[in-house]
Length: 173
Image (cartoon, one colour):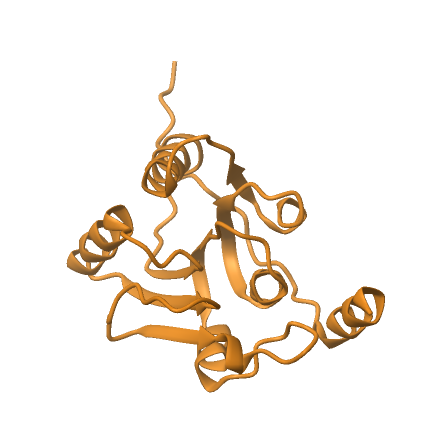
């Protein structure tokens, strides 16, 4: 059964042409965030408020495969387990709205590996994809981190590392 499920899943994917990967001096005005984390996530909410104060557009997609809720942001889309077909592809308007946009940068903050999360990761249109290291997701991310900290600590570490290593300005000798 798992083999048939995976075959249908792979068959439903539409390959995306990867956009640019330039990092230095990059302006990230359109930011996408995809998460399945539904407990206290203070750093994410602080990040959203900071980016909105800088006039950046943020879209948040929550995978709510369990009963919980993260935030009520105006551009927040939610996918529940009822909106996922039997082979793991999200079938909801909110997912389609999220996937229609082109993002400068997209953060993938997944605690657990799931087919809906993999589908979104593989089909979103984004210049840079950043996220937590999961064996199944690493081939599709441009930058990933692995940390033993809690989810807030991991997100902080991801933001710091990306800022310093990818988007920081280089000092000339």
